[in-house]
Length: 248
Image (cartoon, rainbow, N blue to C red; front, side, top):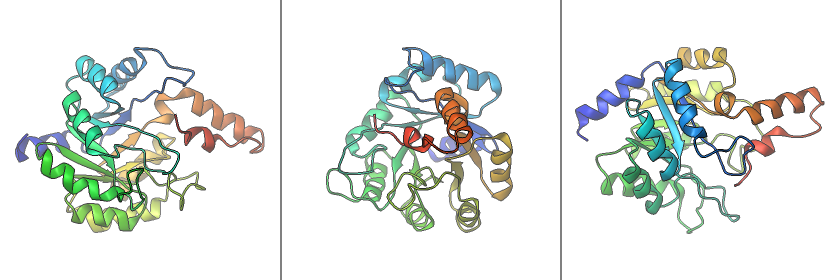
């Protein structure tokens, strides 16, 4: 993939919605074809891109909806770390071979199961697969800055709420995201991802400087949407965030 092709992919997503089409086998909505149906529904709705987890689901989606750019990731959980998004080169290679044009990986300062720092993988992955676009999933401003300096093509605060320092939050930090956009949007494609639950929130992010917005659970995981309603209506007796952050 040459630089012109990369530019075309990014430009095609500009100002648009990217739908995260993910399911785990222990989700109540799981079926073999559910992610394909999610992707087809997103295409019907006018989404400009897709995000998907695991080589198997990436392949199925690319076969069914080949015309939309796909951000691929591979979730691998371990009890001794909060790093779970594409943690090693093994997962990076499998995502690329499955057909994703864009590879998402954890670019936080957290320690991985292998004892490395998560954000160090970006430089290694770019060197081995220069044809790919790389999406840096970060949790704060400093990690975003580090990702920009190390050559990320796309940056988003996907992991805000999934690190030890941020796991208590329920809402996006729009002020911090706006700061990222002001400082980095001339260098990378800025994407808002995480804790966006309404169209109005997505529009706010575009006004704050987002090039595109990723929405997942609010669109494609109805059991978590229902869980939020039950939790709020029940006076916070059961924390829906625990379900959203659960390891699988």
